[in-house]
Length: 502
Image 1 (cartoon, rainbow, N blue to C red):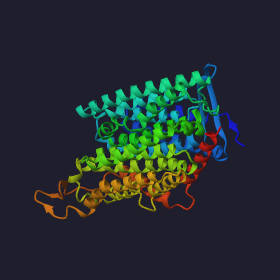
Image 2 (image 1 turned 120 degrees about the horizontal axis):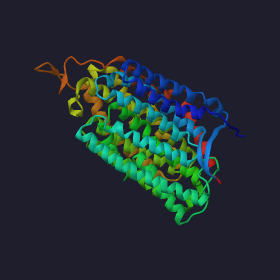
Image 3 (image 1 turned 45 degrees about the vertical axis):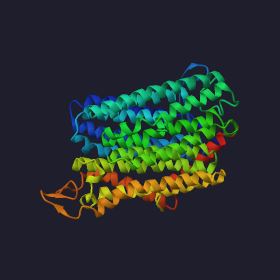
Image 4 (image 1 turned 90 degrees about the horizontal axis):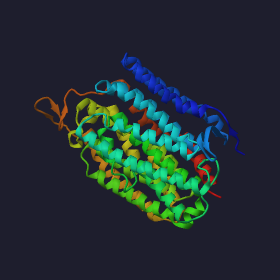
């Protein structure tokens, strides 16, 4: 029997980084060292604040707190259940490592005084989404995160960055308006938008369908779902690499989180199946998977290839939730967890390579694995996990998703997963092979391989260590006997199925 704890921990966890972002902004004008140290300390404290909630939640309890009511059924509140915790713990963990990585990476970049406050404020906004107690509060933090992260997208201030930022901003406004419309419709139909009320909309009809479509547009845009993915391949490559890791590894998951809440809290499993709305999501998921994987093959810019890869990977997550069975949901939640680790590793490793060599074109990186073995070793582990090579975490999530598809009586989706894995292999393996086995002959002019300076070595320790930890995590969460992340996914899937049954 679940109990509800009324305490301030979620409020502290969300508001602490938001408050500290203002402190960091003030401090940054006086001391860069103190600014960097405070940013890392804030991310560390936030991670442990999230982790401290686990004992309550592991017992099947919920942490809930209403801050104030605006109207009956509409207010500002926080609520942490096992789904909220699953997203918050991986987000804060990756953010903590990226904060450490950023110290050296941003030391050679302009705009550090702007980057760090935005970086920490975005952490608080993301956690606010995951810990919102109702859709109104979620919308506030969703908009805060979307608008403030625009500054990360345009950080380089190049023509490409500003163009990508403009596209990102337009899509964000469209997504925000769609989400706001969906919340208004839900409030009209249910009289509340609270996440603690059980199923909010229980009958089909024109307005419920409009609400579903509006939620799909609002959250699907942030998740990079076809055809709303158009901002993603432009925005992720132009941002600084630490920001790219967070945009792709974490912020895309806010869209996935929102859709999980919609399917299992706003609506319910029988209603979604009866109306056929799940088929809309399944079709879009398949297109997203195949499109992202196929277009990634054609990209020669390393970060742009990784960005298109993220589109395909988010398709897996949309597929897992749309199958509407517990096995698929286990794979879905575990893939959210795994993708955060894998894609953060890949973007941070790519950032270290670009930081040391200035090269972004994949064809120029032959032999880089001999110069930067730890960085490329972590990249290789994460890439193999993305392909789905056992016993890495990516294999475990794809395996469980495939079992969920078979349980749903839809082997076609297993074929889609296999084709996507093949495409993943086609665009990741050439990078790995060229990195470790290419560039044997030393060229004239002191260069090694196609374009790598001869004297290149590993990046700074504070960049390499987070990359190595994330790469190692891809092995640990695939091999570990008592797999914490997988156990968390099992609990979360069971919670969602129970919530989604009227």
